[in-house]
Length: 447
Image: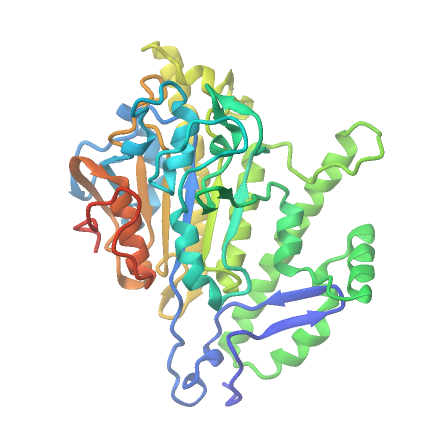
């Protein structure tokens, strides 16, 4: 291995392109001399799914290790030791608490804030600062982007979306302050360019326009820098860098294909079509791939992604469910509708499994990217028909840099605040917080 040390902040640069690098052995202050593996940072991501789940097909019957996998969680079979099922958690502030109807809007508004959303459809919105943004205020100072906010369904922040609740609640889970939801990105191309593009000069902007017009790879613009850096690396780091750049190119190719498809199928008008894949699963996977790249390059350590906005009525024809999701969630005990809900739930978990596998495939330090992450997946409702907020469907994946002990079904006492989990994750991220939302303390048994 070369004895020349390089910084963790090293990037590959070219006109119109800026490419961060994964964690390499040579980035350690001592690795070049002593072969010490550099320490990886902890990451935290939150994935939201709408309309609750079919709980009987979600909840394991066995508690502890070697828990059983109900039909909905079967896609996690190869990841069971990396995922804990958390039962018994509650978001009391998602309940009406004298505010009447509007459970779907509250379920998203409360998901990461643990605060009662103010029932208003105008501009006087108020929820609470979300856990990701609390972390971003401290941890985000160490990265290019304090946090990354993604969504797989277009949304808006104005208007009435649920029984007198502003659309801002239904369409956002990340809040910079009690009155300010974070802007989410739904277009994979815009996320990709945010992570890797550069528009700091006129030459950068011209290069970016040329690259997009000719559908060239951004890697073409940084290969001179990459070749120079490669000469400084040992064999292991060269392999890591080559694998990483190949992955970036493949994701870029998929973004380009989505744009070409959108252009081909759009009406001929003057507005450039969004580069959002028509295939929903492909869209979700692209967005989770962006989170993987952002974590791998330490561009950010905090991310959120909404698989769908609260109350989403998307149909899932790709899995033979043409019915609207929200309509199905009001199942009234109908077995056919419940079966379709379970099919949607399983489809969502399949996308989660894809994301977790991508994290696990990437070696980092003595483990992998999933080992150094904390991934929360769940909904702000338990059952979409009852609109209840207790016993929420929540999964916690990853090792949290050795601070979590995954691979269990942990059943907490009924009415345990979900905020206790959020507070516990802040603690593991090194964020000093005595309370969060309606928390009563940190969760036991996590690690």
